[in-house]
Image (cartoon, rainbow, N blue to C red; front, side):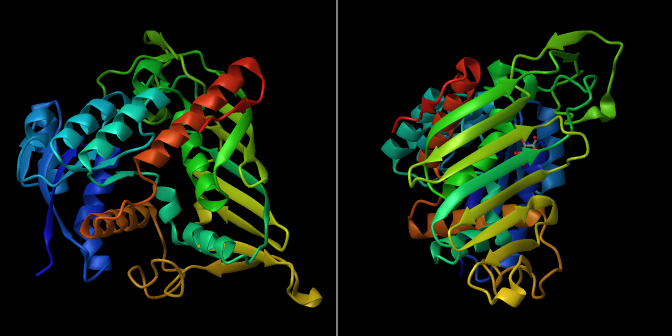
Length: 389
Ligand code: SOE
């Protein structure tokens, strides 16, 4: 009999949906499953929302008291899918109660806050993961495999973007993502950190940055209720407005520890771009290109191909590729956002079953926050900023 893993999920919004779906679906894809997640308790500070989430996401119980739930002896894993300002408090309490933890990204609002979380999980000896899910896209894992095997040689350049347009309209609501006290930062923390995670996964650690940051939209209409609207659908140009005190545009140069150079651009105001998370990597023996909006595909160019066929080829990921034995049996059937979360859940359950820390874990989450903070500092003063170890 496969062992079970009792999950308490704190928060029940968009990310709660993605995580709940992964708990249910993971054993259907990856069998035998390392552990079978049991959706035990759904927590939301609003009791009605907790009960709603319980029914919708298939949890056994609902609660509005995360402190009591985190302390329960029957809970094995605490899943934090709340806004950024509560990550640290919940994670530290969960670690003290000896629970394994998965926390949504970014790990916290600042590097210092992330460090308190890392210290807590280290002291408790629990398994911890930060949910940078895009490296779980099979095409991204395939890119990493090619790079590790030396198929494109020594990496010289990483060029990454994360462009969305859900906040391009200045009359789209003032979600918590525009509030520094809750979010920590804007495009840098929300989406730029995803690219930093990919850059570290594919190329290696980043040691210095030189950035520009900007806030174009300085006020937005207040939204009723705390629900994250993520877009212009509820736009309201006539109501009262509140201040945006985070960046909405970031562009940075990067220096990697291994000598490679690179750049990242991130904005949620790029009209026409939906989830345009891309990278282009050049090595001294070839290149790799990925675009999440076409996530079944990886484009590769190997410089040692015969001259008459040299050029980019498109690989559709399938059974021959990372996670292919669990996902769909024919390339091109379609990888989606859910699949990245299902794979993430699989890797987390493997880590808990084996006692080996997964990656990215809280140490990576802390390092990414150090890099994000360096980007924000450089954005303020325009100088190169070293990211200290
Ligand atoms: C909003 O920009 C957002 O929901 C991010 O917070 C997620 O991390 C990203 O995956 C999708 O867009």
